[in-house]
Image (cartoon, rainbow, N blue to C red; front, side):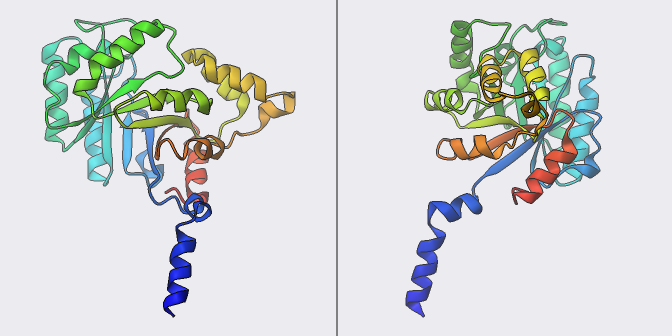
Amino acid sequence: MDNVKLIILIFLDTPYVKLIYPKNMKFSLEITMKTDLSVLPKVKDVYITMLPGNDFRDVANKAKELVQNGFNPVPHFPARSIKNLNELKEYTSMCKDFGVKQALVIGGSSDPIGDYHCSLQILESGLFKGMKVGIAGHPDGSPDISESDLEKAMKNKMPFADYIVTQWLLDYQSIASFISKQTLPVHVGITGPLKISSLLKFASIVGAKNSLNFLKSNASKAVDLLKPRDPNELIENLKTATDNFHIYTFGGLKETNKWLTENKYA
């Protein structure tokens, strides 16, 4: 009997079984203010976007609703969409009062509406004390900032952060290279199962040049553009680099929910 137990333990420790049963793999999800919480998959961390024009009070109240439903909400704090220090104080205070323990601090839209032009400015406020803080990573670059400025900004933000969340990506080599250079944990941005034609559109919008080139080189026929791309291919290639993945659904929440369930990720 002891020999049988030993064989079972050895089998369970093989890479094959670890791939089938990814015990340590963690998934987070990004939603908008319009997302119906009743259809959310069983993931713990739920990020709330604060798009241009959104009221931070509404975002804070959405976070409160998530807390009440047993989720760990992670509201976005887009610096360029926050008017001033008083507004930042009110936003952070509301979130803390509602039981929010985590925040994603980003630059946000390209046009500042107030005093802040970069995420470092609100990180330096000290108002996120007691919260777990994520910052944005851009392995594929950004259309609004040079590579050198991105590296400098990342270095300056590191002392205020606990982890990095990347833009959504498809080229695993550029992601792996980015992860190898970081001193903080990296949560890799992925999409749910979307058609390649949709991914091409979104990649063009956000300026994800490596992912755009990757898609073009892998969609050799017109019929390929209509096929949903399975995120497991990317996850498989990154399984030794990270076990944290952040899902951008781009409105395909139903398909993402199904994919998470079928793969026993949630």
